[in-house]
Length: 116
Image (cartoon, rainbow, N blue to C red):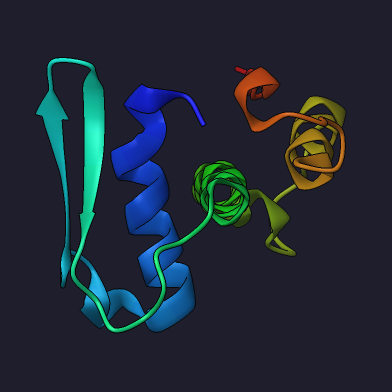
């Protein structure tokens, strides 16, 4: 686990495992001279590095999906029956729907440019 990702990973783990209402409950991530440190004051066992990495991976893909969905919503009106959708818009929307399956790493996602 890269040290600067610790806070994001721990929050993602807690929210995914215990629910949104447990965000920032019973744990703290703070800076020390050597980097970040986790203080875990919850009844559950402290998460392993593997659990934190998995949670961070899932959280990153969740963000990609949220952004993709927002871009699709912006162009939903093109899909109305009384609007003729251009081939460029059809291609753009399909490229959005192909995300995230078209990428292996969430950091490598490049969103398509909408047609003019």
